[in-house]
Amino acid sequence: MSYQDIERNLFVHVSDLMQWDCRTIESLPKDLRKSLRKRIEQISDDFTMHRKALLGNYLIDPIDIAAYAMYFHSSSIHRMLHVLERVPAKLHDLPTQLSILDVGAGTGAASEAFLIFLSRMRKKRLPVFHLLDQSSAALAFAKEHLTRTSLMPIGVKTKTVDVQNIAPIQQSYDVYLFSNVINELSDLALGNILKGMKQHAWIVMVEPALKETAQKLMQYKSTLTDLGLHIWAPCTHNLVCPMLKNEGDWCHFEAPWEMGDFRKSMDQALGHHSEALKYAYLLAGQHKINEPRKRVLSPKLKTKIKKVHAMYVCDQKEIGYYYFDKKNRQMADVQKGDLIQLTQVSDYPEAQRYYPNTKSYWVKDEV
Ligand SMILES: C[S@@+](CC[C@H](N)C(=O)[O-])C[C@H]1O[C@@H](n2cnc3c(N)ncnc32)[C@H](O)[C@@H]1O
Image 1 (tube, helix red, strand yellow):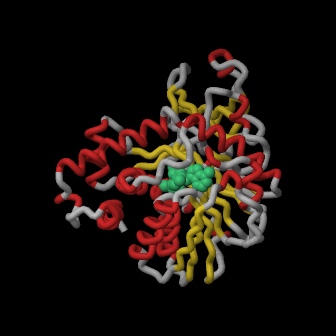
Image 2: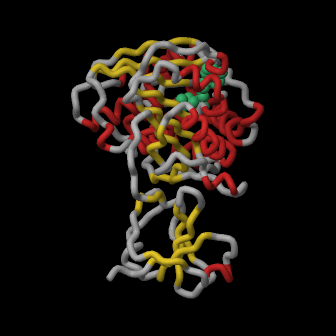
């Protein structure tokens, strides 16, 4: 399904919710488009500038649900899909009867992404989604939207609950989705949610790459490992995130995407640039995977050293700076977010002259 299709489907359900007398985005009257734009602008500002002060109850009014669904929902899907695609293939063997918990589900974007992911896997599954949110209005929209959009038979159950004060959940799920809800989750709440977790369960956390939320995820890693979980990605190890040593850094990645026309028009009107979606994430579970490769954390960067480029790589206990000749064939196709296993690497003390106190390596060209 293209993002254009996702946007069109959302609009039909938004139009029903708002009791608007139009079935296509193109026929949306100017004044309604304007009221959507105003709410989108307000929610955007709240998410970026007033995030700390943002209380959970912002998806109550139908116009806010409509605005969220028409602008933020599809980017949440995209981020979640990107992350789901990073679950190691050897862990894909989930049961046919699948139960998914979507925490802070909002309009149901994370669950919709999971449905798209399942349909791409082409294995028969019977998913039942359990959506939690403090907004019963958002949950009602999500249930309707998922049920009407899904191409496979699904179950959708909803529960209105304050996840910050949630009691331990005894029920077990196969997949736990946390999309844009990290701000609402204390360590205690997370422990209570994951209480009955199945042995093979996937824990999927995705956030936009705002410094504050991405750093919170980096800290959250230890909360997950303290619960006995193993981190599958982006980290390839369970140690405390080495990026936390540097206040100015936050671990994040980005993905290009084809947004729908409505989102494009809103971006234009609001002066937003979202051609590439930036996101931070954590994938975890009880299964220990031995990943010998390392995660690349930066794009190729020019350095102060002539003809030498560099990339930052997570070296478990610290961030390693890998320098190489700009024509190096080992590094030619390497991109931010990739997993690499480099051969022909040695210490590179020359870099200390320009970049003191960093762990620097030289990547030789292939032989
Ligand atoms: C930014 S939205 C994310 C929605 C959806 N997961 C997504 O990625 O598009 C955050 C959601 O968390 C819900 N929420 C915030 N605080 C909550 C709380 N204390 N208990 C339950 N839900 C909460 C909000 O109602 C909202 O639907």
